[in-house]
Length: 212
Image (cartoon, rainbow, N blue to C red; front, side, top):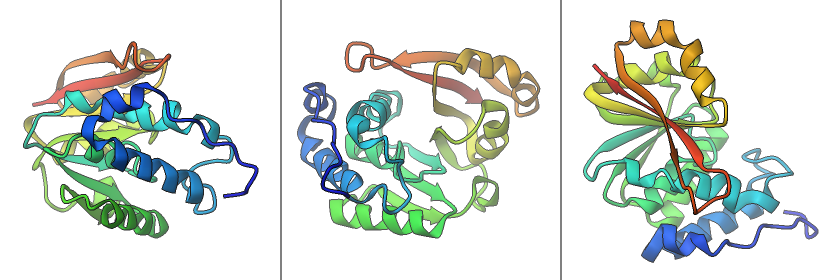
């Protein structure tokens, strides 16, 4: 990280979101700020908004997951949201699924450095997953449009499990554009849930759906 790069000061809300895990979140944020750009994990404009746009944007979704679940994060990249959620929810087992070797190396390093015993890292694309429909839920953030994402995520989820996908302001329109895929993969109760109101200025929009 260049000496002149400005990194966002930790927002006051972070401690409330992470509770007694805040020190782990701080260590992850510091590592991402220091190495993220040089390792191709985040762009040069991201450090000044690292906490609000990325870490807290991911972490506010943590209450949507059920204790004891095994959850996949497709295209985990820098660990957003998978590593952040693993920090916030040690009672959930996270499978970080990422095809790029350098990102897999980063994820593995962070899991070891942070001592996260509730995370496994799998080098694969979502469509290369070999275990079948065994996950309780799958999440993803900033991977692709919903109509493209559904075929990559729904086949990994057991019947009755959930898709919990972090999206932007266009989430409702994405649902409309994915009607064909929603029917094909027999998704039900597809809706947008905003999370993080009062914590971050722009709440995270989460597309949730049940896999039949």
